[in-house]
Image (tube, rainbow, N blue to C red; front, side, top):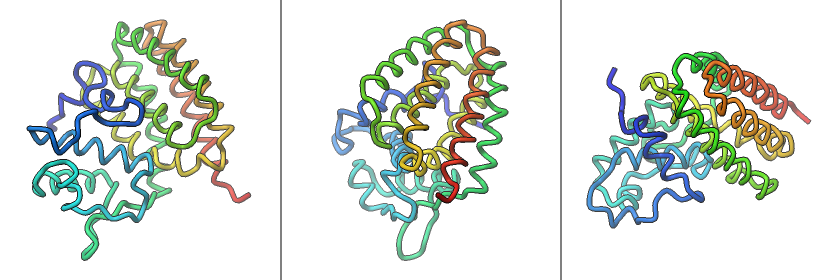
Length: 245
């Protein structure tokens, strides 16, 4: 299986660079000289995962091509990748529709990520972990200074947290699996946010604090156990938030 080096080499790679203040790039897409299909893919995927594009919303090839300053061919290729990722589906007469959240499939993905967190203990670079610890400390400061924000604010911190973990993974296949499964499952977090805002913000703060401390040790297995425990708490909180009130 061919893996995309741009996603995992040199830290978190292209997408982390774009996750700044909720904006993907200071350069308008239409003014770019070269069409970057990876940039288009990561931008649309981010919008879907943070609910800017909501389930049921139609994505039109022509509109996306105009926004990104591209022909319809690379946009069509991107939409095909998003379809394979389970995030959109083609509907005749409407274009590509953002899929509803499949709760059964998402539950399976979350259970898989619970074990994947432990597996990361075999695939993280100790030196990169120490740098990531500093990044988690910065995110913690952002969290504390902003207070309880909205779901978009919560999503941005969550995404950046996962990409800092990604920057430490030294196996390309594991790295891609880590981030791809996160994007598949992340919508459930944000759909549940308003029902459990206080709990979710508390868990996010605890997560950033424990990640900061465990990654600072440079011990991959200790960090993996920390992530596993954090993921268990997130799963419990998500399913609790979905119970009828």
